[in-house]
Length: 294
Image 1 (tube, rainbow, N blue to C red):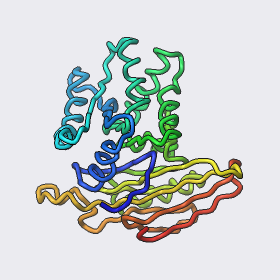
Image 2: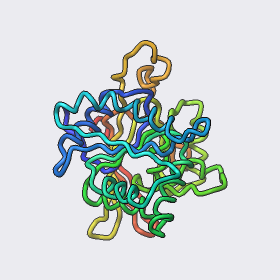
Image 3: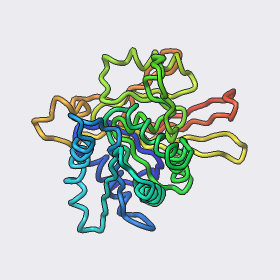
Image 4: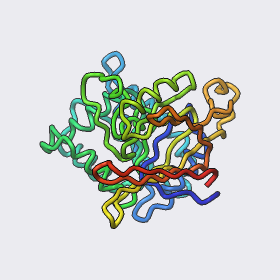
């Protein structure tokens, strides 16, 4: 397996469990864990179905469980944590411990606003700190642990939910592990106008369209000068070859990762491309460099 950048946030869109993203970037990262080999899966963005709070959450975890079970022989541990209205303080204390310590945490798919509300509500209700969930995610980042966002989870790990560009009401402040970044998920070229609109509305953000199956492996920090650095490794995964899913896996049809800046310039990135961005704290300095194929 080729050497991979050790990112602290992986945000991606996929139809099923494609191998590059789920083996190379997630399972193998957990198996290399220093303190544990645990993947914590959070399906809290899934809404109730016919009044059942757990059905969709359990189904979402099942879509990952079968893949992770292969790695149990190598010591991988995978643990779900479900949201219910009946969570007790002792339950949430377990969540805080798992969230802070697990080698890999996955924020699953569903509805971006549903999950964002629940994640923040847990801190508000039990600790009087709505930002506790996000604070722990950033503490993970500082310790070099990986937090993964799949679909809605990818939206949540960005600076804002993409709905912010349309002035949609309600909370759309993401957790910012992918700093000053916005993404569309399950992207198709017909939505490139949305990307350009977002780039114009929020020129401080880098905007990407992620087709199935693709993602961004991200890390950022502070330079001695006080400027901020951020590195993106772009992932285009074509390994899911089930003929029944051919329509849904756009990267096997040649789709790349679309990106627009606020002037309308367009890039289409391949897997293995990198972007390095340096910005000043006040935003007056903002430069980026791109490399093709690593």
